[in-house]
Image (cartoon, rainbow, N blue to C red; front, top):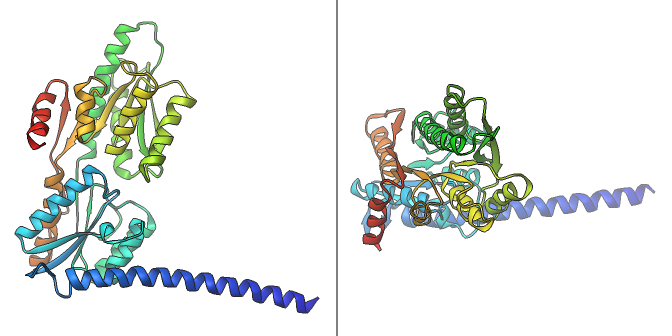
Length: 352
């Protein structure tokens, strides 16, 4: 009996050994691959197409395939070139899908000159940012902050102001809804947030709630949160469709990301809720602008993504030169709705 017990234990240990070895090989391969990239493009040679650069920065975003983050990267990349800095979209250099935390580890191990990252408040993210700073790799958080970290600066929008704007728009829609349906007891307003909401999203939500509490319609307004798995387009679509399948559709849906806005826009069409569900969106992709033009999306918040990318470079560049920089760079925002959509559709047509 003892002999069998020992044999089984050895088998388990053997499996564990091979599993650990496999994980090490995967990580080594990723690091080796990125090491090649950093040698060719980055901090050792800082060369690209025979051009020599002073610095090599990387950007780590929530979804580098979205038009929002592509525009942020383009702003950072072009402004970097103006300052003789090469900016790399780190996820784009990888053959596999790595988490933001894994990409942070790769950037730190490769000793890049600066990191721009859409962060969060998790303990792991905070520790990684602090580790980078301890190794003299300055970190700028953008769009989503890591409040308790040692990052040098945060580049983003005023979530308080955005929450106030969403609150004003939602109240205007709710007032119209109440006037058109005086017998309606509840006006249902839903805010879509991440599975693990960021501090910025919760600030937006609390500011909307504050606006509602101070309004004459307060007794009729029902504000709630729906958590969306927006790790990719498919999961976002599925969780948003569940809102329309598993419950009565809300009167107003407030979206805090480009992906959620596009998914809600499509779901409203698919479930024949056009004119019944009001959509307050985020960002101004071609699809979202089309939704406003077709009177399906009521409005959207436009963020100056080019400016966001440029401010990240400014923060890193200033920190490198003088050892400090502004703690917060506020990016410009504006509202696009039916009143001014023609201006943006005209710009889109000209670019096409």
